[in-house]
Amino acid sequence: MHRKKFIASFIPLTIAASSIKSKSSLSYNKKIKLPPYLKTGDCIGITCPAGYISADAIRPAVELMESWGFNIEIGKTVGKRHFTLGGTDEERTADLQYMLDAPHIKAIMCARGGYGVVRIIDQLNFDGLMQHTKWVIGFSDITVLHNHIHSNCNLATIHSKMCNSFPVNWSLAEPIQADNILSIKQALVGDSMIYKTLPSSFNRLGTVTAPLIGGNLSLLASLTGSKSDINTKGKILFIEDTGEYLYNIDRMMYNLLRSKKLEGLAGLIVGGFKLKADDADEEFGGTLQSVVMEKVKNFDFPVCFEFPVGHQKNNFALKCGVVHTLQVSENGAILQSKL
View 1: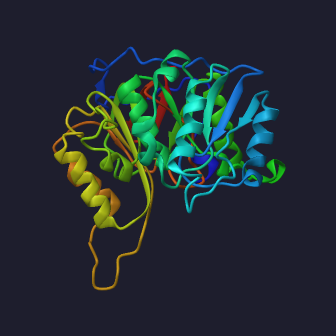
View 2: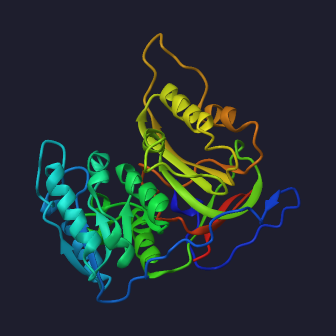
């Protein structure tokens, strides 16, 4: 999606559409804890709770975030490697635990996704995070952290690109890439966040105000029934995924349906989905849109497709747990954070 297809600005937008159903009195938890927004001189820690990344690979991110006025502390797992992981389970646990506990660290940037957070989540103690609240940043495998923190700490987090997505040369970055990275800074300093998408014939119209939660669909499904599972009632849920067959998406959407995560949902945002082509003679049939709409046909909440979030260039920062207004009309969709 070209950068002109959505808006990331600080000017309140409204939609005048009498055909849009509005839900402004949904029951949701209004007591979400908001970590302090960052100011010049604050420290951001970088750690690898999932996959491996080298020190050279994070250098562009370090330099850019320093240019924003932040101090950067590089964790011990950066450059560590245990097969595909950023160090052993013990090393990754210790590094993330230190950053969760350290009062001087005001935000934790996960260096990359991949796999591994689920291996350490039950060994982490979040008492320090609750005492010294801070922003946890990342996406993909970091969905485990977002949902665990939301469910157990009731604390807002930031779903966004990570160090491995920063441009090597900022002056040569594509506008869409630069806008994505700058949205991380906007989220960290407390700017109002507004995103707009083009209309889709698959969208279901409506307006709702509720907390925003979600992440990678595979991770959301895999967390069902665990301590990291999430309560979706009265929430706007966003989903994205990559490298899956359509039948796997169908299975995971059934997981959301059968686990009652679609019941009482305030709204659904469908982001980027990079699907694998079906094997020859094993075509599943249908489309992503038909698979999703089949599962939500008995509900009336608004649904938005092609939102700029996921494993793609247009993956903008979203504040998980924070109240947002989602407006879906014939003119497209607008998502605006309230904090």
